[in-house]
Structure formats: C-alpha cells, structure tokens
Amino acid sequence: MSIPQTPEYPEVIADDTVVLRPWREDDVDAQLAAWSDPTFRRFSDWAPGNTLEAIERIQEQHSMRAEGHGVAFAVCDSSPSEIVLGEVSINDIDPTNRSASIGYWLAPEARGRGVVTRAVRLATRFAFDRLELNRIELTCGPDNAASAAVATRAGFTFEGKLRSNLLFKGAFRDSLVFSLLKDDDSHLALQEARHYTDHRFPKLQ
Image (cartoon, rainbow, N blue to C red):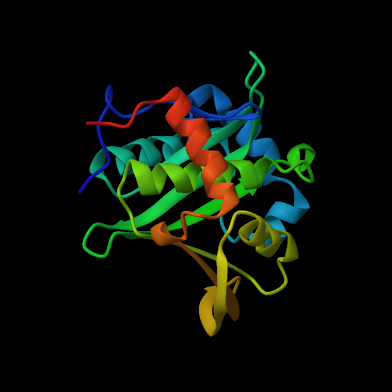
C-alpha cells in the first residue's frame, strides 16, 4: 500500500469552510509567522527558523508523500485567496498494520473557530477511504487541553496516558493517547466528512 501518485492523488480536499492542499513555497512567510507564536512554541519542540529551512521542510513533505510515508496539507480558508490557517498531516504510515498518526497546528488568528476539527475530520476520512488505513493515533501533552479537545470533537477515543515516553525540550514528558478506527465510522463527524470528500472527489479505482 502506498499513497496514490499525481494526477490520481487528489490535490485538494475541502468542505464549505476549509481547504486542504499541498504546501507551496509561497506559503513560507505564513508558516514562519505562525511558528513564531508563543503558544506554538510552548507545545512544539521543532520549527524551521528561516526561509531556507522552511522550503527544505516543504520539499521533504513532498518526498514523504511520493514515497508513501505520509502526507501533509496546508489548511486554508475557502475564500479565493486561500489564506493559510495551519497544517494537518498523516504521518508514520505503517502499511503492514494499516496505521498512522495525525498531527496539526494552527496560526493564532485561526484558533477557536473549529478550523482544526474540520481539518482533522477531512484528513481522517481521507486516510480511511483513500489510504485504506484502519487506525489513526493522536497524541498530545497532558497540559495541551486544546489539542485534547480537538481529538474528542473529531471522534477520537481516549486510550490512556503514556508515562515519560517522549524526550521533550530536554526532559521526559507524558503523552495522552487517542485513537480513531475505521470501524468507528458511525460517528457523526466522520459521516459529515465522508459527505464532503465523496461529494468533491470520486473514490479512486
């Protein structure tokens, strides 16, 4: 199993509010502005610090998609200007166990509007329908209440806490673990996401 290649691979996934599309080099300024936000830096231990590093990251993401290891989307609003709001990504795809993890971040001005919940629903639906995955895992720090709330709103089930599993900024950190299975398909959020993606993109043959 691998991610379908262009042109079969859909370049855009959307609902009436948000658009998920591949990152472009002209998005770099928006990325760097978002990564300088104190809240982002509190919950993240990575971030390219300049234009060259950001461009290299975009190139790495395109390679990751081409090789079937994952896929990263820019989350944009649905206006013609496609203002960049953040990112959602399917990472660490395991074709044997049909599993992967999901990650996301938002620019400060996009928070509190339900944007990332919509993006996670769309990306998860894509992972189940197009990549034929069975399990998506979502983790966050115990102090990241906003991220945990997104997991719940997107239909993920809380599984528990991993103790001191992650070396984060020089110290070991616990992680909260959430999961969503393809068999959890009856959740309303996923049914809504199915409507959006199938309406705009017929399933790949």
